[in-house]
Image (cartoon, rainbow, N blue to C red; front, side, top):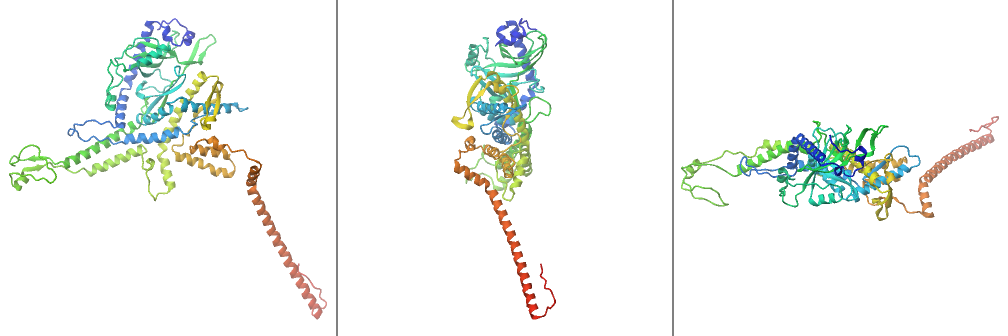
Length: 630
């Protein structure tokens, strides 16, 4: 299809393949990219309509109403907004807690313990990277936790930036990430398009660094659509404004550039308006290519740049998942309608209106009264009552108010926004165990969502792990956040070998609140008393759950002198010595009882012997032999 005249080996070595292709080939590729982008947009048109409605509800967009009259009530009840804020306030601290955000596990045999040491270094180094080197990572995770519950899907793009010389993991809004709606997952997606908005300076820098080839661009494409203008109050800049960004499509797709019948994965960047290709780079690693003995390509494993964060999987099988905007949107609209009807009913009932007979001799025009004012009319009171007929309005309906309460209660249950979960006091008569059980059940839904986010974070960390394996210097140093200013540690590129560690978030996906985390570690204290687990490990977990600073400083006990060591040994032997003294005391009591019994028996025998002697002297026992009781 493409007359590139380059082999697979040549294409693998080029920094920008677009610079090696002729103009006709680039035009064909540019048209193919834009056509694929337009097709994917058509498949998700209905989703975009739902997306706009969800954002209108979440952002409390005010719309002017003309029914039932101009400027009628248009209250937006914040059900969706409250649910999103509640989820974010729980998810963000539960997933990003403390300074050890990433942990690494050893895979395979580790006889000499080198893998375990490398896993510790990798976990601490990656935690330092995302919290310190990648300055916007934590801030964008905060944004993700707000957007995700509203729209259901958010994406992160992980790559190495040559201009900055470090890894980047940036937030990608769902409207800027275009995929065919019926795509099953990112791994099997034939096309993934990231919509980029670049200024003139951005383009100049990329051309100067040979990232883009120099090509004509145009600014006739508006980057802010009408729905975004209405929500944010912004207007798209004019085409002649220098600040107007250029729209580029960075499409991750497959192309058969070497004409061998097998399409390889590439990243193609195209200007949307002119369809000019500015960059083509390969999307695979050398170890991801499977070859036959004769060098024929069998399979190429594509490298993924994007990570999908999911709220609730879409029941219809679509790629974009659903959030509170879809789940609570209809209920929120119903609540808004009921509130506005009640307000309009009260307004109509309070502001009297009606009909005035022509027979009433009164000046025409608007009739309004000030407080304490009386007006003079040329009619009798009886004629006045007969000539003025007010509209038959009613007070706000109690039925509508009851229905409103029921809808709000249903929405709170669906969004897990109950009184106790929002921090309100459940009452003085409710036991603490019941309160904790209710909170635990209320957080069950969030626990499943946390597990999905935990899986997504694990995928993102694996992408960062791969980038470190490729771009990290052979040896570098970083600051261990737990150890303060003196906590420097070295990291080696060999630590990021393929089979050494498995990186994942350090947060527990089964714990959805701080109280659950504290209760879980407090239960370990009961096992410490049994002497079956390590007290120092338990102490560390308790300090981490409490988010205490400088844990390493607290865990490092000072060196003990001879007297302190003796005191510690005495304290450890105290229980044993107390048990020994108790045993000696019991033995002494037992011996004392036995001695008392023997003395009492001897005294009794002596009394009997003396009595026998007295009887013999008196002659009463002649011929009898005295006996003594034993």
